[in-house]
Image 1 (cartoon, rainbow, N blue to C red):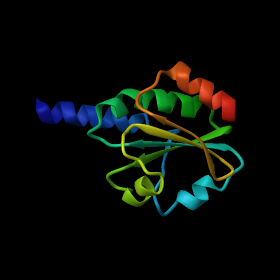
Image 2: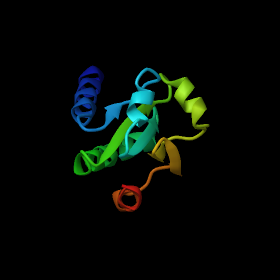
Image 3: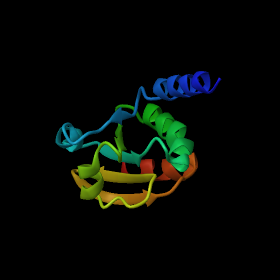
Image 4: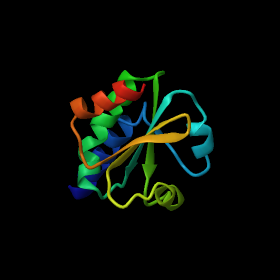
Amino acid sequence: MTVMLLMMATVTFAQTQQFAKAVTAANYEQTISTDKLVVLDFWASWCGPCKAIAPIVEELAKEYNGVVFVGKVNVDDEESLSSKFNISSIPTLVFMKNKNVVETVVGAKTKTELKVLFDKYK
């Protein structure tokens, strides 16, 4: 029973990852080399608040597709990026424009709160 639930949760999570893209140390420079707003979502699989905002981040990635790049950075896999941005709490969303950080948001936020920031910097 536990295995089946985990498999279902994994499939559900994987299906929501179509617009927000994984960002790694290997593709980071290419990712931020754009004139679009870049939003990096620093998260971990064991983080409850990260799981809570994951669907919201994905919805916004879909709504702003082509206007805003939304990337997901797994802090467990990408320690160098976590260190670069001094990530000490997750979830953390880093908003970047022209390779510069314009805003950092720590903790779970509502879709409305995040949408205000997307609109402010897009």
